[in-house]
Image (cartoon, rainbow, N blue to C red; front, side, top):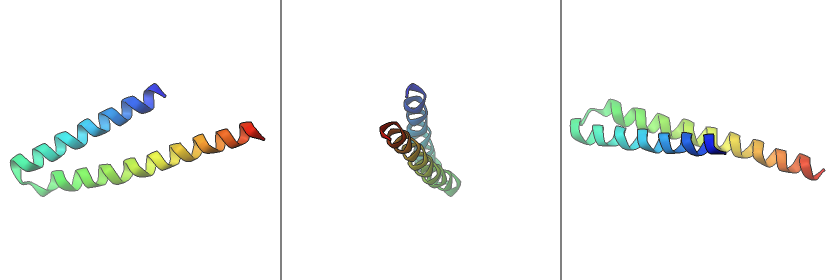
Length: 61
C-alpha cells in the first residue's frame, strides 16, 4: 500500500509540475503530457482497485 501512495504522490507532483511549466511557457506539449498522464493514471487506478476488489471477493468465498 505504501508503494501505491508513493506512486500517487509522485503522479500528483508530476502533474502539478507539468501544469506549472505549461503556465510559464504556454507550450501545449506540457498540457498534452498532463492529459495523457491523467488518463493513464485513472485507468491504472481502476485496474488496481478491481484487483483489490477481486481479492476481497476471493477471500470471502
